Length: 315
Image (cartoon, rainbow, N blue to C red; front, side, top):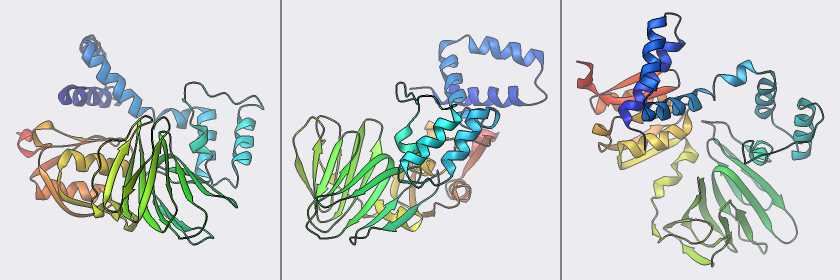
């Protein structure tokens, strides 16, 4: 894991070099700083984050693809057709998962910070959290959902067809009325059951039941021990992030899902506790409130690089 101070220094160097006032001496000093391997890794991390904001606006293909992805597509076939036009009618190639075509062309998508909900014809209701993508297929045998990215809350109706939700690590299924959420993480799926019961089945593992009030994370081979679910975990459908004595670093990790760029905190304050209900529609206001109530300062090194730090570090 990258050292926090080194990571912040890399962000500071990025801000200096992007400014119009950067001198040759600044660039030489940066090169000397960059010669340290850990500094180079931190710089690479900053460049990765900055790349989400810089290249698309300059690159003709990126600008077109970005514009395309922001427009609702009636079907995946039409979306792929449009992308093939951008690529000059060539064959679409996906190498190593670099281009997440499935999530780009999913039936339902949300942008960062956006939350949507919609009813299904058979009586179920879905909520899609920030930066998420899901396909929905209803036929005579099954109601099937495929979550490619992000988080989905399901209020499943009680009807003969099972409701099956697939993720990269496996699937969850219910045959009854149930309310549950599924969060797709890197390498794992987190299931929270708020009402009813749900069966989980890792791709290469055995099935098991998850009952009301339980939360389980599972990979492609096995599931971790279940834990009590926090009912406030579903408050995002109301545009609220609930914190019940949550560590500050964990709170910021969750809040960061609703905004672009990097959001972190100094390790010295990571263990501070956060309590309350916070509006997800205005993350800047949330940061200001945290800074005021916890006696911290918000360091906005770049528009997309923000950290909370001890107030006394200003001295």
